[in-house]
Length: 258
Image (cartoon, rainbow, N blue to C red; front, side, top):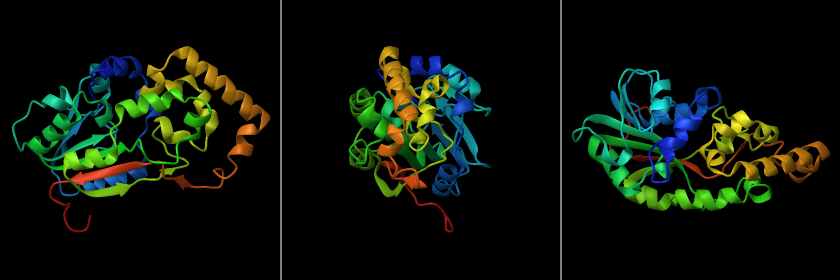
């Protein structure tokens, strides 16, 4: 989760403590990213945070502007830096990865250009703000999220073009997704009532606490009355929903068998 002009490093310095308890890497997303990185022996993880989704067996260098996040990273190679000024020579790595971080970068195109400069392959996981359906939490309880997310996320086609992506892979969010970012609890609404869950999301952390608390109280009431379950009975039987999360791959394709 990387640097931005909106004070993102400070946000992650604040929410970073205990981050790993809520933001546990999901094995299905990990498998998708691992296949995209297949054959890469050296990887730079830009916006690395606590080290989620890094490939096993590769030499990984973690980059993040937040010292609190880097302190939670288990690796030995850790660099405090911003995505738009990576302190590495051209072609230093077999691959560069960036997971749910490009929306935080101060200059998206420059940051993506840096990925292309320092690595031969690029793997980016992000979200498309123009995709529908929209998470019910936004439409019914926190429309303030919509304005924030549309201001910081760039449409997927723009990101793909700037990255030079040759592959775009959808990732429908499983109902038991273990990585507790905003979308994770689409079928577990009671989780949004937990302050620890909300604190692990940069979205909630940047909204006024009074706004978030008021929305949580409305949700609490709808859960108690059964109104939420009546409105969303169709979701309760679904195992996954496509909310517009995509994995972009650029540069040389993974080795055969990926």
